[in-house]
Image (cartoon, rainbow, N blue to C red; front, side):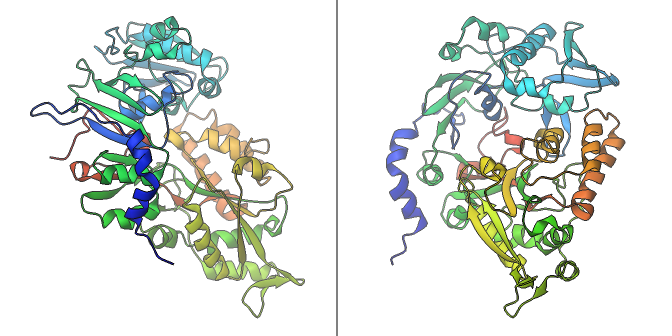
Length: 518
């Protein structure tokens, strides 16, 4: 069979799509940077701020009150400061002189209006805000938040793009649901204002009154190109500067192509997470679950299988988070000892048996994450080294499949964020509590449940860290269930003009300073 080079396969698969999808942009002004051209897999369907607007902070149109950064902490963004003088009271102070792109001032009244509009219309905001929370303008630039119980995750909520993008609520309400009227309405505060949006692309131009300074670019276009190969080809053909979400498998070919670069970013906050089935199968035995954790080679996954495109997991959480314990270790000898204790002895082919039964585990993956194929293949080999046979099954619609009792699986591999935007409560409640919506494997640990409940209102940072450390200890040493195979890193394909571009942290792709390399 003839092998077609990857670059040629991109052309065969995607040239027609690119001709229809990637638009041109106005010619650059003399002496100025040209507009930035980005291709992404996710379309912005409309200007509806309650369902589609959360993409806007990613590309420089909208902003948040707080920003989650690479140091694993929350920093003021539109806020000047955020204080917690009492357990049930927060005080937010806005920066002076900020306006929406339409010229209206961003003061306390405007921000409270944006928050209340989100609470009324956005399911994400409704789920993020505790019952009884009250936001009150207590000064021209001051907002006081009061709650019946302490709300320690407020900084993370204010940094989460799906909750409170700051917008001109009055202008939004004026259009009813005719969202197209918001194109060009300047409802956000970011450095680039939306001027066009359809099912192919979004266009934005620089906002000259931006509060941090003059934007570095005259504008940008974000084109929606679902096919990963087509996005890479757009950069190769100089029809785009930055391609988001490239598959790691494309990295060798990209790096071998003149004028193209596969850039890897900093640690993210999630990764491919393993969930073990406690309801049925051999992993009901805690000794086998411990053996699995110690048989997995986390360094090999990150450095050899994915060639540094993913980061090594050292705990459930990324190492840049202040509460990460870093307690993972690979120990095949301990794994073998645990399997021996559980009565599983090696057969002639190296696979362990007990009472005539082979020790076989089923790894559940899903086709929407192609990187799970090399990951599951590597884990198969690692488990085999200690005598565990592994088979891989792919489920389309993984969340529903894992909750269906008739589906047989032992270890599910799911891309998840254990601390998205620095928020941990949602993951713990959804995946680890007995009634959690995605408690796939029937995990029910009374101590973990109590710790998660306490964490929801624990204000003291030292106590919060102690709680999270204990949860990580339980999940490794006492009652294993959820664990990280790796930690994701941002990645992009760029051309020479943007060879210095670092993938955005927490989906922050474009800032007011984003520009071609010097």
